[in-house]
Length: 334
Image 1: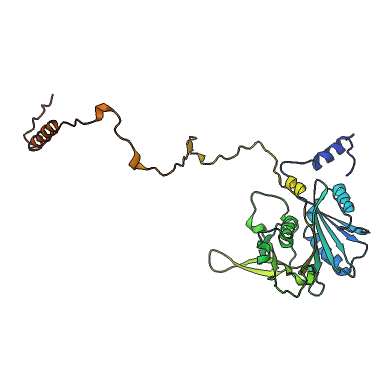
Image 2 (image 1 turned 180 degrees about the vertical axis):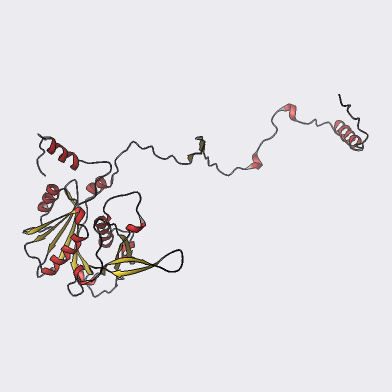
């Protein structure tokens, strides 16, 4: 961690306030850097990813002697120095060729890391596709296809999905124009194989992730809704997941905590109508009407004398035999 220095100028004070924690955070920035040994294919793949994130990204061109899974202090230093919470480190070696490591930091501490092993045979860069290029600062649609991403238990594929969403998300907005949806990022995973002869720790035995980027084109269809077509834009990348560093429980709990705001929380079963009156809903259990007591006062109880009951019955019959026409009419006053 860098030592905390009290700002001496207004410019440095504004810079520290910009890096301070906020209730609504700024868009995540990504830092792109390479190791001492890095193949040309890995550098091209890193450049293509930077082209899709260049508004909120920084790129280093010099070599950096960094080994993320052995010592991540250099990555956390670069993250704090450049105010970047996402780090993409490209390297290549004989044991792990064409590797891109995705890392996330929280409070300038390493949160988690995941290694993507790029397939050089199937890789195609953006320049190899002769199509219209994506405008800068546009938000993509994202599609994840495959049962590997739907695992209820956190694993490498669920972490890869979370990292790719953080990478392509951009700025948080409440509304978006439909015309601004110009491309879609599709990430599909092969179905996992259950072969007892393969080693689970071998990256070659894991499902392959296919990353494709398509342009969205709308054409006339003769109806109200247009006809949508997809045209491949690039890059075309196939990955196999390698080493993984899961987040610590304490740091992950702190990172997932939401800041308390002044907004009033919505109360359950309470709403307000158009006139401003508060309406509440109460849920009660099932009522047993057989146990309901309707007569409790002595004055409401009927007499149990049988002679009185017979007299009441005779009176009721006599009153019922009268015609309606014979009833006395009330004189109207003028």
